[in-house]
Length: 230
Image (cartoon, rainbow, N blue to C red; front, top):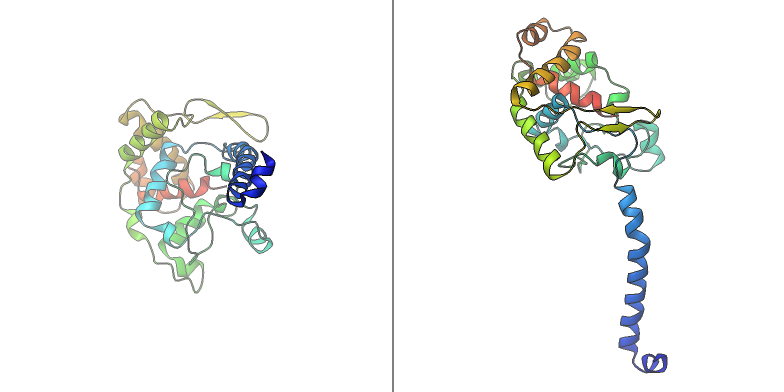
C-alpha cells in the first residue's frame, strides 16, 4: 500500500492532507467548543439591558465603537483583559465592530458610571474635550421599546437555549438568576423596577419624573446596557 502511494504522488498528497485534516479536526473542535461556552460570570441580559442593547444598535453605536479587546499590551493596558469568545455566548448579533472612531466599550461598565453616561450622551464634547461624537438628546425624551426587547428574550430562550430563570455560576462561587417575564405587562414592570435604580443615580429631573410615571426613556435603558459591559 505504502509503496503504491510512493509511486503516485497525487494520491500520496491527498492521503497526507486527509490525515492532517482529520487530526486537526480532532484537536481543534473540542477546544473550540470549550472556548465558546459562557465564561463563568457571564449572564444573559436582563429585560432593561436587552432594551438598551436595541437602542445601542438602533443608533448605530457599533459603527464607531468596537466591543472586542485584542490580546495586545497596548489594548489591555487601556481597556482591560482581552476579550474571550465565551463572553459573547448570549450576544445576538455580535457587536464586535470593525472601526474605532471612539474607544472600545467591551468593559466600559468597569470604569464609567451612570452619572458619567448621563452627561456624556447629552454633551460629549463637554465631557471629553475634542470629542467628535454627536449628542444624543432625543434619547432623553424617546420612550424605550420594551415589548420588542421581550420578544427578543423569548426568541433567545426558545431557539438559542439562553438560560433565563436558571442559576448562573459567578466567579465568587455564588449563582445568580436572570428572570424572564411571562407577559409583556410583567416585562414592563420588571424593566421599570430596573429603570428606577438607574434613574436614582441620574440628575435629570425630567428622567426621574418620566420613570415615576411608569415610562422608560431610551437613555435609561442604554445606560443599563452600558453598565452591564464588564
